[in-house]
Length: 189
Image 1: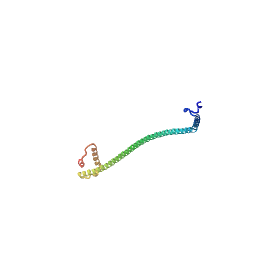
Image 2: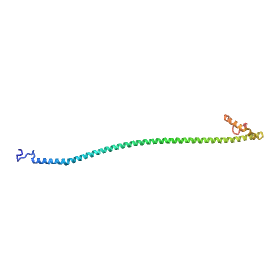
Image 3: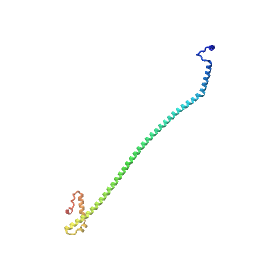
Image 4: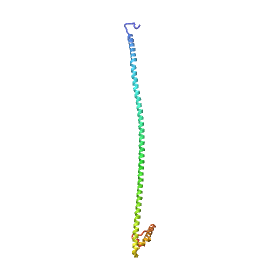
């Protein structure tokens, strides 16, 4: 009815052949898009999503591994510091022990040297005292012999007069009596 009019074409209504051709072309386009293009786009989109999610997973795994390695590093560093402090303390204790051992050995050696020196001094003192006693006794006997005019050496030795005299001098010196100055020993008896 509206189409029956030949001369006039309504610009609002499309031509029916164009509508049919447009619908067929649209259907053909939809089939091609659905059959070939959309599956490829979907595969590409899925691959892209997988790549992004895989990259995120890998980044998270790498981050977790890095955090784990960092914690291991921190633990090893703390352990190394603790070990270094322990070794330093042991070395200090060993050094103190060695120093104490060396000091003890040095004290022992010093005491031994001092004791040996004292023994040597005592032995030399006794030797000198014996020599002095013998010389003093001989001089006393000689002086007494000169004073008396006789040889008293044999009798003085027999009777131990000289030894008694020297023992008396030692006991007086030991009792706190002031000793006579040297050279006055011959005049006091």
